[in-house]
Image (tube, rainbow, N blue to C red; front, top):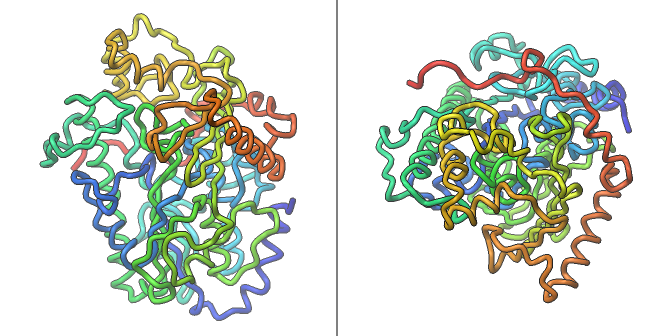
Length: 494
């Protein structure tokens, strides 16, 4: 594995020889907890995302994009390094650090003459100056895009990370309906109770998705006024699924499947939808290749450039027939304070398979204070009962109404212990409600897909597949005062 210094040195020299004005700018607009299918281009009647839709129409919409991990810190670490998070030691956990031995693309681009920086949430939460680093792995921090541009040397290409803190919880209750959203138009997924509380909670989520959309629009307008939009590689996506039960911090579709759209002026043919499976960390080798740099050999991510430069839609590359995702520790919420819920998944066009390595643990955290927790406690931003699921009205309703027979079925899907293997037939069960792993009719499929998953994990040197998985539980968790990366926005909404 290349060290950070070796990776940067190996690419910087040839890049500097290139004419700077021929290299593209890079804008990465990254939402916090924005998952599929919550964008108007996917047919939702409530949330409005004209900026994302416009990027997709002018460029390429990826309909099967998944993050490496459904948790902020490891997802962002995987993107910055272009590697699966399970290769990054402490970087695989929320609240850890990202060792400087792992090269990150902002450093590589900066060494090659790019002006790099971030606003908002970068890598984190975690110790962003731990592991030998002197700044956030996503780059130096600026108050806003104008300040970033002001410090740019004339003629230098830029790489800007816009880390919106939307739509992360907490939300302002009823902000969505007060903005004009109609509860009757809300589509509640079947793994959540369908009632007024959940619908209002979803609208509040949509309100923040729309704010992120507007923030990104302002960036694009500024770049266009500069006359540089055609030479800017624009990527818009989210770091994991939405913060609702069975979403974020799970390996179900709602936890790992995220919107992803990319435009690059006239350099790529627009108006295309690509169904190939891609991992969001694939944008890292894509950035490097677009800048004319050599991609380090230890990156497990694969450049999207062949797909972007293709004129095809649908399924383009037969080698992209599946995607891998995984999870270690989210928040400390188990009897063993450092213990997570280790799992890995393989998703292809028909099946979604999850391997739970320690099914004796509670999947969303211990049920601490379950019997005494109130609706208000569960809805507030406090960590009580099943803390891997973000507190909010939807969680509070499910937990406090678990005695209701209809709610109990959904409650068990999210919070109860799970078997070692989960297999879902997506053609019959797109929301992963019925585990068929124990069904004899799927025995051959189960064996084949488990063999495929474990072989892929061994090939990528995943400690869970090579016998060293316990190390993930031993990495320390940073305290709240040590965590970096940018927290939740403060103050009232405008």
